[in-house]
Length: 202
Image 1: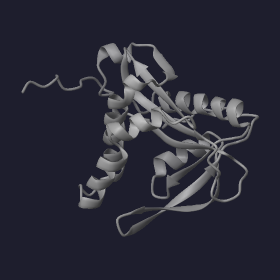
Image 2: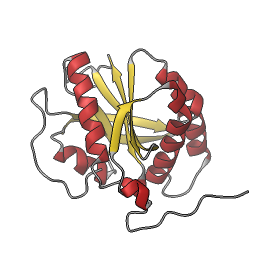
Image 3: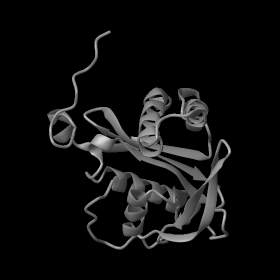
Image 4: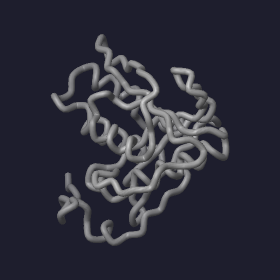
């Protein structure tokens, strides 16, 4: 079976992708396969740092597959955004309207997913997706976003802190028999985020 050429360049992205204009748009039903592939790649890269055990395999197959993303795209309470360079998917965000935060912080718009392919981290793609998701939260739910981040994911915590998010509580993610601490974060409100530059931005 033939395979595509490996990535080249300092960022890992091709010259075509590095020079392309970023497009952020609402996802359609035809995006399900690409969304599932990106979600699997980013989730495994982030969390399967010690290899893939049965719990991780079951989670990926049940929660990150094409059928799961097709269902999200058909859910009237979910908004899915994609980021593309040269027509190729490089990032995604999943927002659920009507999802009450678990700590009583008065937000009903949850950012369930914000993923950027590793080759493109640091190019502002995550920030663009986050801004688009925040706009949807303001216009469709009238509130700031809330989300959960693994307590050991220092990069993500730093990114959201720079974007004006603050910790408002703790939640837990269960994988198999293990419970993993998550920080519950709340956005900076309808007035937006403080300006500034974050050298490690997504």
